[in-house]
Length: 303
Image 1: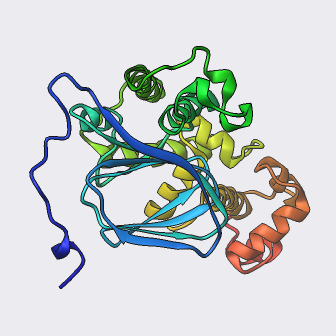
Image 2 (image 1 turned 180 degrees about the vertical axis):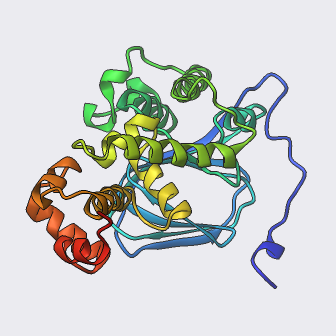
């Protein structure tokens, strides 16, 4: 019997009519390279933020690459396995509730597209950390030492009972979702995730083609389309088969090949015109084409 056939799918009411969400648990985890967790499945939404490291995440046996700076969501009743490819620090929060899936739909997050693609400011991550404090800290006044509070500066008022903690947790979670929504472009279309992903790649390609002769980096390209660099990397690998940096290099070399074919311009000037110094250009050109710039010109010149 396979794994999924062993999972029961009971009818559940995960929220009361007047509840927007229920935070069922969470913590910050530090996992060593080589550790494997799973397979497992749960009946809640598992929100994860990777602070550092690298994870091979298998969702129903489909591989999703997770790197530092990515926020991703594991949906209920999904077969999950995590393989930690490097020492990893991450935050996870377990949530159920009537409106949680509506929130993720607004953010463009689904079972087919589990990663939130935009870079998340530190202040927004602080909301997650505050929620963890409230989930894992009992009565503030009963703590023995200040060291037991993860972020004491974020707790301004003693919390005397569970109702206060619950209300504050809910408020912080809604604020967290609101912050994420503010990062989305005005023309965001959550019901067409595949088109959105393709548009991000197309916009990044256009930016690179228009700016390859300047000193652009992967961070600059990611910022130009409003994405986390790790997520943009994963999109380029998926759609093009190589990294953003490799696409920048290939775009520059293609421009150089055109100049070598049609114009009698000194090679060092060609290198400068596409954003390279002569030595870097020489190495990159030979790696991509298998020949030197001089050899390429002699073989392919059109003038």
